[in-house]
Length: 441
Ligand code: UGA
Image 1 (cartoon, rainbow, N blue to C red):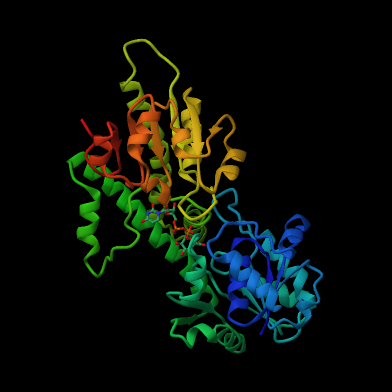
Image 2 (cartoon, rainbow, N blue to C red):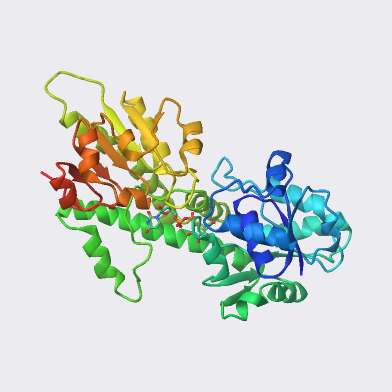
């Protein structure tokens, strides 16, 4: 089938490459010439494991192309996917301007029977309002608009697409539903479950899934606080509850609070939709507040521990190494990362911060003025009173704690991802403060 993907950002590029990998002919449209040039030359602007290889193979086979918005491919497309940005608006609701603009631009150029599939995360009712806009622009209702949300995690997006838990397609029009079923046949024939709904349900499924996952994390983070207060250990408690098949073991890792481009924005939009429609999502509203408060509290915790270790009234400059700027491991994305809350709070309190991240340093440096940067975690720790781990990168799990301790001037280690063994840290002479377990005396 002929596919045009509007938007070669994270979702568009990954989905486009995967659809080409499945055998479709895909044209990714990018309006920004500064991004289009490198893409055409095979240069991938994001870090996603395996993506560069798939893009390269599909480009060479001719199944994946990059084009500007004038592309003639629009005239022969079976499916045009919209993967443009839907940023947070003022009240937490999302801003649909890019979706509307893209729909307006492509509408007159499509052939009758083409299907517009909305990949971007959009609030309930968007596909219907876009369908009305497209029908007005064409003077005919011969192009259907369906909702086809994505469930890709950054860092494992390829596997999430090619061995998906499910594909969700919301189509109010039976013919369009048939086109979408054919599009995904290479996956459904291999047993990937396929859920066909109306457009509203598909739009709600996307938000409900992210809200549900974010709730688990919000719950487990507060549970970790309770474990600390009661003298328990979150790892044992989550192991115990996760073995209940109704709960399951995944997504129960306590940490510094959820971040990224999806959970914070999507929970805000979900709550805003509830308020707008008079069906308030009070549980999600509480979750958003708790997650924000958590990130702020972490900086307070570090500052408090540093203060407690200052001698008498003598106040010398404090130095902290922050390891991990990405919102999670496996990505260079720093959007809503814990580091963006913790680091400014530390620098505002007069702490000198040196940062490290194996992939996200440049992205973080652009947003965190006044921070020094190191090429490896040990250099970051040089002369530090405390080391703080915020991202669960594998290389932090394998840190040589003796070597780290030698470089530091203090002995505080905040392991906000519970990567390290507190006993091993103690043997290296470090006070390891994790999440959800008793702090060292
Ligand atoms: C999330 C969803 O997992 C995807 O299914 C969805 O498609 C995507 O949003 C989206 O809407 O596009 P992503 O934001 O890439 O994917 O990352 P996750 O792996 O879900 O992690 C989100 C945040 O939760 C991260 O800050 C992560 O560190 C945190 N997290 C995750 C925890 O603190 N504990 C966990 O057990 C799991």
